[in-house]
Image (tube, rainbow, N blue to C red; front, side):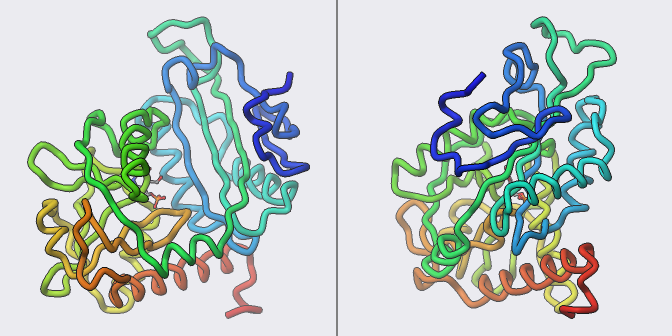
Length: 307
Ligand code: PLP
């Protein structure tokens, strides 16, 4: 079977993994009764690949295990086996810079809201090339953000594929000429972006991001950046901030696996600081990148060669 929409610009030779098999991307498919499709009964992870190496691999695998555990989805592949599959997908796609997408669904069963007993999950692993120059261009120019009400469920700490509110908010943002939407809770506080964590540098130069709870995803980039900042002797304040705080901020930025640290220069049409990427933000990116790449090299066993 060929999935016609998946043909869209699939680079020649692109290979996906589905449930034990490596398949040409246009032929990779799950069953129509897969619970991931029927109920969004599934979780996912996105791993950045830089120079052929997976960044923050252990932390993403750990979060995947946690998401599965919180939903009671049995882990179909042990982390070491999944890690092998991901590397194999990187290799078969000759991926240097891009991302590895992993999705685990609760599997394919006759449609029933009740979770089947002893369900056997489906694992999907795909690779996608990203243009590092395009990401760097975004970093140099900074991006615009639009705020949208946060209408998501109460377990945003689980990286579930039930992303409809995120999809709608990001689409609204893009239609308005912004790159990302920042989601705002009922108290007027920013929770996070639709696919990023949200940060500001306040008028006193303090770097602030929302504290972890069920209301946001514990971003791996967020956590690596916090470790990198701590190692550099910088303090990050974990606290909520309002949209008004963000508009008054000196700098703002977002973090995610695929972009690292991306400066925000405008929120709802209001310029942040000088309207250009700020020095603290760019320093945060350098700290994040250096630590993530160093750890990726160590996990590849290249530490002694490349320092
Ligand atoms: N918040 C949400 C809602 C996300 O979907 C993501 C990433 O997809 C993030 C934050 C950033 O998380 P990470 O740094 O692990 O990519």
